[in-house]
Image (tube, rainbow, N blue to C red; front, side, top):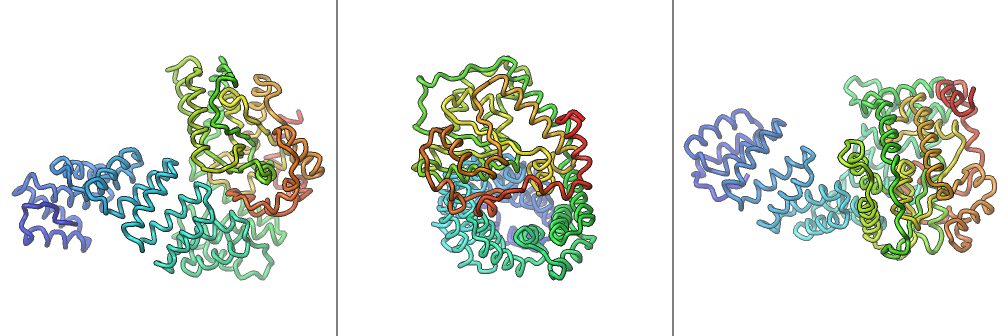
Length: 557
């Protein structure tokens, strides 16, 4: 706490600050209130009591006090900073940005404010501005390890992976035992397909944080277990702790499922896999009704389909998107890797931009505040998306977005990007659903229950039929099994559809250095693998709930 332009004698305020710093928060509050009776317009007191409320996790009360402080003294940078921190904790990102900027305007040399502002901007997916904020933080405080780590994460978000590695390494120069930066390095090496350094950094993370379940989960993904692996005993011990957080218990159950899959004990594998998914579903609060309603809302929005924009009147920024979509685990990462191996193509990975741009317009239709999706709305989606692709700063003009769940928004894509290519990945339904259920997808809440997974697949198939009827000949259907069985023939078909010349590197996609931030990031750095769509058959006895739902609807049994 700084004695910011205070009229209070130091002899009165400093003992109170010491009480606060010593952690006796309630006593500090009592003493501040007594001083406030003598000095009712003293901003320092409101800033200090706001800090006390924050320590007690009374965030709304803290925000009120910090607001009073900055109203009494608009040039009180620390109070603006504290208010911004509260807004950040409350999820009020835009208000947080405004308050951090006020603090910085008053005190430019405020590395903590620049760092926190960067974190908020990153959360808003304004990666370029986030990078600049972290760089300012480092400029004012060169040994700011947290800012170097955060800069690395922002650079990763922006696709500047090699620079991200350098930032994580610089963080470790100033803070060698910084486990968060080490773990971020591990994940980055995984994305780069460097299995050796991926494992090495995970093991280093666990030396510093032996109970970090996320690191144990990553290690389990990197290993092929044998019965005598000492990691098995350690995980069995860790999962018995009664003090485990729910998220840790979920991770350890997924790890044990992987362990028993590797050593061939299916009964134990599914005991832990089902438990992990059951707990994760409880944690997420997921209801399948939510997705039923969402898909129904999408269809409702296209009862009056928007007009497809006229190509001849469009300013495209010379960028042509390729959307690779479908259910997760259908080969979207593989096709992304093949396409991004082409000299004319940049692979941007899984972008969440279409979702963020589309949802507001869906809400307008569903809330009856609009009767149809206007041409202005479609143009807005187009321009904002292309602006985002331009901001990536890559030389290639053909850019692949492989967000699988963009299948939900094909109507928007067709209308807004008439020049775009849409590649819809198809794979065996049971193989797809089994792979989704088996792998931990934090963002796909439907995947934590066999019936939910299969039922979601049926929603997907129904919606794809809807899009196919509405926009015939706009979607290229591409089969994963055909691709793995006839790699060159199918790759030529794919490139022909995308109007790309033949490039031999597309056959040798496993040599592509393009970063992949998906469950398949290591797998797609390997040669084409055949037979994965039949692997579910050895687990068939444990997948009857999933198979029953799919068979009933898809195969008419």
